[in-house]
Image (tube, rainbow, N blue to C red; front, side, top):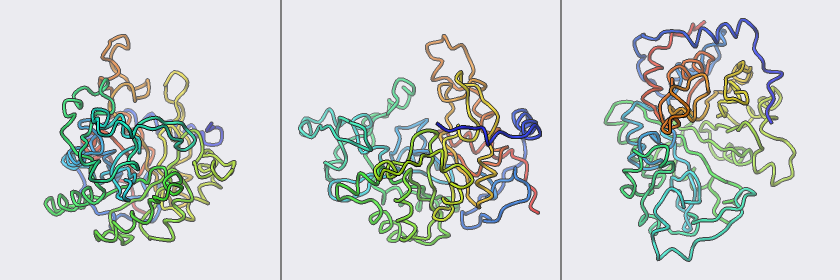
Length: 393
């Protein structure tokens, strides 16, 4: 379990937190910037992000409004102003990378309604957990293209479920093509932020993700370190291997509990908590350009869901010249801290109602966060336009 003892902020910082919660917005938006234009140096003011302004990352596209990891979801995220769209990548049996949050597609496609695939239901050990369902690695790309996407959280987001059955599973190439086409049309850079899912598992079954990932990026003209691409992973050795293959920015994903599965598989006792110590961040900076962290590592919550004092994770990471992106920012009450929930918890619809999502974003932006993964990029962009400029000294 992550502990916050070392990272508790000073009273002055807590005062800044209070100010962040109550600050009004209303400044004109800054002009869009390419990732290549973002400064890599630090600022003397720790409240300034390491980049010119926090980046809006369309988490699985616009998952608050459309079934996740579909071209429609990515398109809407772009329409809403996202700087990056985020495809999670898994492999098909014939080695194609497709956008799914998990290789188990039972809950995000209509595969269960296809009798021709009934015999492929299986139980597998994925990162140490027993999972029963249908898995992308047991289908060719052509077979997966006969399936249609479904909303993952239909009870919480019934409006998204109205799109069930309309959209295909996209390939990584299709996601990149969409970003590039929309970027040209809109005269702005739209980045891609792929995540390699379960890389140790796929390596073990002979479908390693790293080679097709880099091959696809190079083939689509996205192999330069100044291109608008971040590559992310929850595993460490996967990123270290990728560092030897590319100079594109790499992001070490870090959860609030547990450990990288490649550590577990190798008998390495280190956990995610070890990665967020000053020593751990120094080691991460040897192979990665940033961290993508569970938001609770920045502002923890108590057992009731109320926010506690912010930690020193952002300034500690910035001291190592690491960008800090956080996940996952969502507008519904069920995902928000108790401080920002709105409505009566006894209301049957309470979980799916929107809380004070802008207040949460303003809080984290005020702490110097460099980017957010969000299901509702429109709110992120709206809040970001009101951020006061950072001093560039």
